Image 1 (cartoon, rainbow, N blue to C red):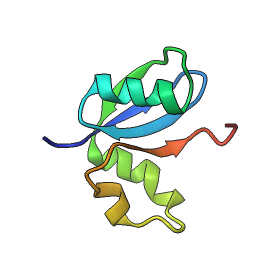
Image 2: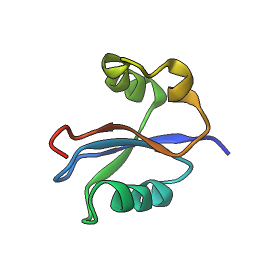
Image 3: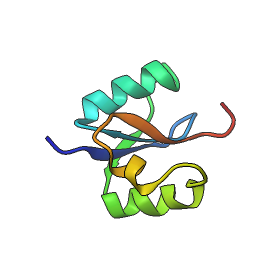
Length: 77
């Protein structure tokens, strides 16, 4: 199974990688905000372009690692 990338654009922004939209929504609600948020699947290239400026201590290996996680999150949290 391949990880996909999902962008949440509601009250709190998040870019999450997960195996399915349902898994991404569940992860968002558990770790970011428990409300419903508009979510769309985005390409890996789009996700990388959003993620790349925030690299800092994070590496490309973290980006492609097969683990469900938040790549970017609203700085207001």
